[in-house]
Image (cartoon, rainbow, N blue to C red; front, side, top):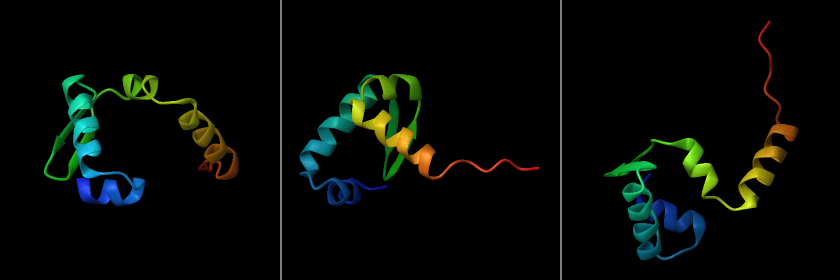
Length: 70
């Protein structure tokens, strides 16, 4: 996932994506190299999000529940 793709998806400037990614890298939450993002600490990542993440995640689970293999 490139910074250009992220900027287009979010409708923000590339400088903002660069700054945010840099902060997450410094905090040890993600690793970011040449279009590859690796989440190193999901719990800390979730702690830094606004309440909208949890609302969207809850609605996703409600609308598209995981199927149980039998």
